[in-house]
Image 1 (tube, rainbow, N blue to C red):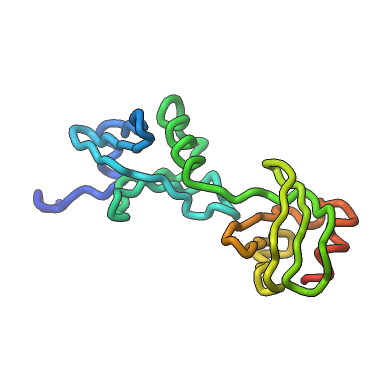
Image 2: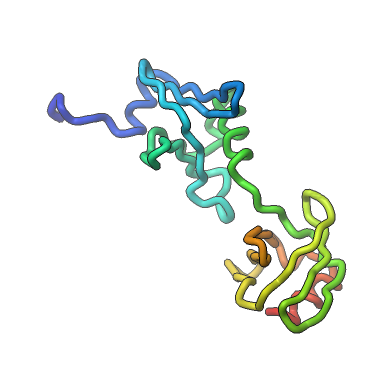
Length: 168
């Protein structure tokens, strides 16, 4: 039997009473775990690209894990909605759906692209800014630090794949 001075793990602390997550009028997120309230918390995904629906943690301002959720589909109601909003405010990785054109095949070059958030341009400094995660998933970092995701390379149109092949 554990001693009384042993602190419960984050997973154990959430079982006593369900956590409550909310944002105030200033956009600051708060987490209530029983009688304890934590301010300035943020949610992070453990595997944001490969398994975005699994492994979500709520961290304190100092980066300490306060609460862990194995899977988003297991959550319901207000907690799930609040957690998704908290994640959305933190994450920004547009998905490239189509390459419309490139300014040249020597870097740096400018790409005109269609993303899930609309049409835009990115400046590719070098081929090393394209990282392959697996056979069909790529991350493209532009010169300004924005990371773009290509989820399924083989599902892209023929012109997009042809343009990308010049850089891979």
